[in-house]
Length: 136
Image 1 (tube, rainbow, N blue to C red):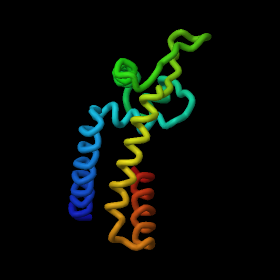
Image 2 (image 1 turned 30 degrees about the vertical axis):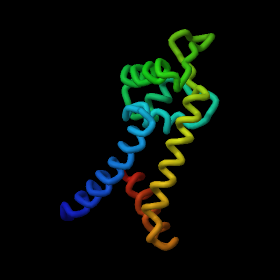
Image 3 (image 1 turned 60 degrees about the vertical axis):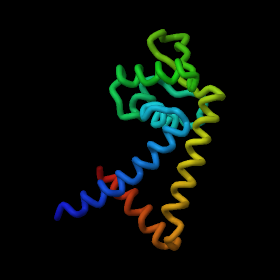
Image 4 (image 1 turned 120 degrees about the horizontal axis):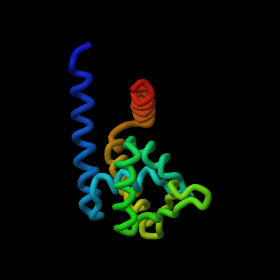
């Protein structure tokens, strides 16, 4: 296999990063906050360990990202009643609103990407990306 496959992935990644950085800048978010707001979703609560796992971070790094989210008013972290070391994380109203704006911007970006493709091509690309994600 030639390096062309990986080069194509890197080219797409760079273009997506530009869009991601633009969204982050518009919303005043750092990369970690942006990613955290995406993985938190609008669920009621998740544990600190699950948060770190979703972020693909070590528990200590996940804790630092969580501290920043809490300090900036995007999330709340409450200690668990039975285990004081465990935390339950949830989005604040500000966090939910900001997350919704991220989703809207991502959907607009996706619309621009898929605008010149027919539904069959979009489906093929999506299936290929899902397969690539699964094997990585």
